[in-house]
Image 1 (cartoon, rainbow over the protein chains, first blue to last red):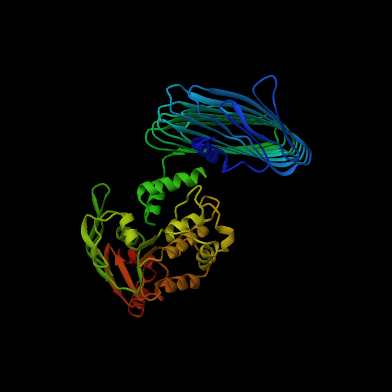
Image 2 (tube, one colour):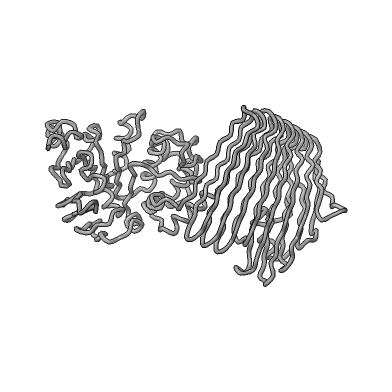
Length: 305
Length: 239
């Protein structure tokens, strides 16, 4: 681990040192550190790249960190990580990927994560994505998250693209059984000529299931973002999509929230907004002594936090 | 401490429309001023001119001996002018605590931040980490706005209709805040229609048709305002 590795790990997973609990750290397609913890077992897959994580029934208060870093130019790291989470668990899972590229070839990581969450378990899942290095070196990240929530299971998902990612396609597909809930909070920052596409498809199949899909994004420079979300209400359920984008400079955002129902008892709502930072917000912060630039930075930082 | 010289302000709206003219006034240190007048008479415009939100084409503004006429909002704020908006701005993602810290220019302990919110009648801990978004009512936002100005602790505070949106909270509390914020050497300029605030002023300034029609101590001005009836009726009386 060198200085760049440590900085990436700190930013994507908040790690200053080896984390407490279970962890699996991957660098340039190779395993560089792993530890199991009480109730959490990590094993490498034998048929393809990736890991299986098994979390025993009733595992509570444990954490699992599985950051990935890519610092080799031209490397595209593809992994399949499957999470088998038992019943009545309460765990924190921190994933995320940092790509540092200074070379002429594109570097990237495609992480395909599938969660099987047992009855009445709660999972908080945080993934952060970051690109660093040369502005002109491509850093590509395409995370896919598949979530199966059993009866009464709950997942809080925070997906954050901090900056510097040249192109990303983020796909999340979820199905929810009775009384399951899924709260997604997405924050994305794009600059320069970066592109980011998000696709959420949430199927509310169970009675009493619910989801909130909240996306906040900031697009600067001439970057492009696309947000496509679908919530299917197939039972008596609640679903809400909210997508809010601040656009600056010549950036463009396309936002398409979609709601569908097959059951008349589904309660589905959405709201969407795209616009510049309101002039009155900047003026208010200027009256506190901030410059226009400081005001914009504070507004963006707060908006994405 | 603040001198307005020959202020004239016009808006371009189907030709030039004069909003304010011949405004000349000296605001003294340590005093509480209430500026009143009919709707549309130019009170809020004057407040925004002092803060630099509306650029001034004619006239001069001197603050503590310095000509600030051409200074930006930020520069005026840094020199010590605070401003509470009539309609507070909403922010997604910025909390009351962040606003108070930006206003005070330093990190605040929870106790310090709570003190500012408590002083405007809010149960502080419930609000510190609330975002200043649409989940807050107008009255709640207004109190946080006032708390922000208190946290700035400026030599000159401008409050644009501080009573607007505050319905349940007693005006006595509001009056107390203004008294406390003076603290012997601060100056308040309060834009208001509320007679209850007039009585607490050291001086009342009445604006009519974009000019200062009269000013003086409440004992002198208030009986004359009574003659005019309520401020809102001034315009119809003139017509």
